[in-house]
Image (cartoon, rainbow over all chains, first blue to last red; front, side):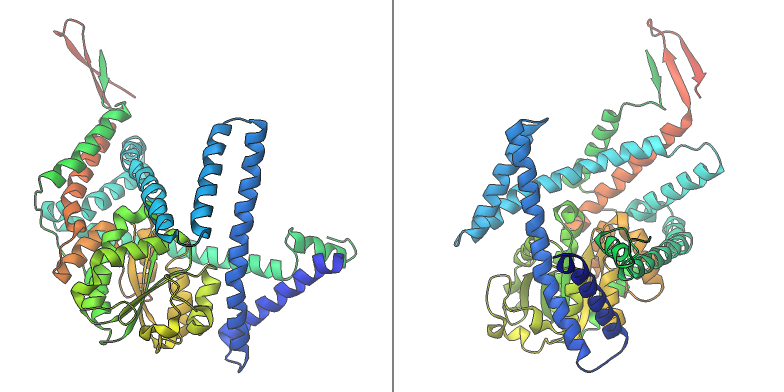
Length: 216
Length: 283
């Protein structure tokens, strides 16, 4: 049992990673088809992951309701919503009701929730953009230039405002974001390498420890 | 009673912002909107696609970003259909993006452009799996897609006959409100197959996408509602984005006023009798 629970997943991971990486960089006949087939497998795997997430959510909130833990009333609403949307999407002939109930309820709630962010951000701007030293002065002035430069009123006030906004976005912002993106890319590469080699402290990391006889 | 400009109750700010948004929508001002080079690049990217070319359209934003991005989606669909391009709508992230994609093309009214569903436009719905599925889609479309959003086999949809892989795609349009887009589309379509990529993003993430525009990987990108308004002007099809520009201008001025007030650092005290004033310099 331990072979299938521990070592097989590791070997599947390594095989898949090597195939996908090599197929991306080197055009080997036949390998592209294997990579495409592995990509196809990703669709039902992701669907199962969503299903598992839903089941886990359902089980957790059933426990909350049964034990009447804190805010259990919200869990009742969640479970009823879960049952409704699961039902209308599974029962044949309910597609229109499913789409309409989702877009008119969940969609509108979503839109309303994000609409609240706008005045909240204005309030945050009022509190956060305080000039106390050179750094905060640069921060605040930059924010004001982008704020006004982005709106049509900025074009009307001065043609320099959109130019200043473009300079801020294209020069300092681009330089900083490139540094961030490259750092993230290297981090993802390093993490992927560690996972493939089994050095991460996941189930795979534990497998490597056992394969090496318990050494770290 | 003490009033300090450095300590205004947030509710006054909320009220001022709401009024500054509602009033210009009810009573439009009509401020001029200049067209940026970025919007022209996006417009030209769509114009460069030959008639009958394939455009893959990813409406990768949820209902939270709909206020900023829906008019952008409509503008892109109108432009592609008026150019007689083959438009393929698909999502790789979450189900609500499929719903929004459907809402977008239904609200445009494809028949107004002489387009027929299944011949000029198709909605393939959600293919779960993120970038892994995108990679598979780019390599072999028919291996991943069997039916469209409405369950019709793709063999019955003429638009899918000549779409086999990313080699058949002329342009990718990606609208995003966060996440790894458009980076993953650049990796899978631009880097892998040399397909041009353009689109738009909400204002909050546009700053992180500018490096890709600067490097030439993206053929222009529209920033939020302002970019959409410029794009609508270029198209000659005014929409809700232009309507929102006056509100955006007034709201930004209101926010600027509050920022200035917050930095004034001056408090004014009015005595109970209302006759005496003195100024206090607050910290």
